[in-house]
Length: 426
Image 1: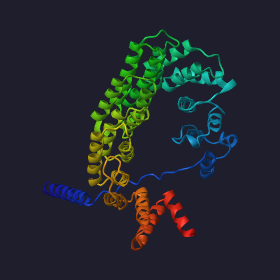
Image 2: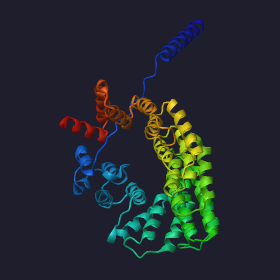
Image 3: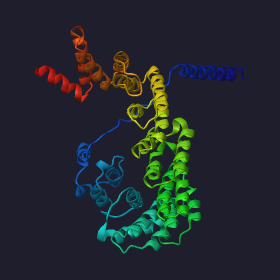
Image 4: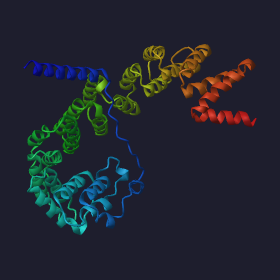
């Protein structure tokens, strides 16, 4: 008994030591799979050694699926080859795997099967009965589009609704849209929203934009109010993709208070918001002549480091319809941003002092701010500083001015390159 205990203790001690040794060793990082990039289907097919469709049809089923999947569902749409992929799936004896890939590909691509549409529908219907959710939605898609068969909204809606019931996202989206538009079924916006609420936040946010477009088509104040509410809800749900609802909101003549709600939603989202969404709103207001509304947004964006917004504030300083107290505030905003290290703000201040827009003209301050931006690798500021130094005509600084032009040109700034070419030709 004592000997057995001794052996057991020794084994346990060994295991503990081994575990300790393993814990002391740093875990090896899992190697990442190599990312393959191709510019076209033919480039990928050649690199992979894949044959023509006729030859690929004779390959083992798993290999055929691999090739067809690449041709039909690659993330990069530019390298998909729909003719190749669908032909490969429809060649030979169909299987569960080929039909399900067929359904997935139909939902991901726009494609016309022509006279083969009835046989495709038969395959999808048979697999739908075996529980394939995407097959149900793909069947509805063909009925909805009238691809190779008489278009039928009523049948399409029934199949989309079936797909929605079994939890297919495409089916849920199409059912909600059909109920909103009254296509293939009586209009029922309340039920449409019930279906929409089953989607995850990003997909629901996109669907809200589609529903907003449909509802806005009614043209009544009530329709526009409902549509606006959907767009604001979309922004709140997925602020990272806010440009989609913002574009709809700006293009369709919604009242100003809707813009205010959208702006509030973006501000509330903070860092989670699409960084270009607020700029898009401000640009739209600016282009529409609403400088009073756009300038505060540009100032906010500059304070958050947006380079493009600084250019708009620079333009605002030269406008006669902008009051001096607003220009004073803009200068202060730009100064704080420049002190924080933002080159576009420093360049804007340099331009303001150079031309005397919004401030008293000062060549000394203009050069100081342009130099500040130039040292932070702002190519336009480097060009402006170089030309400013050369135009001043001081012989002892000519080399410095040319160096700034050369730095700007090396960054690809076209005007700097042109200036150097002209100097070299003289």
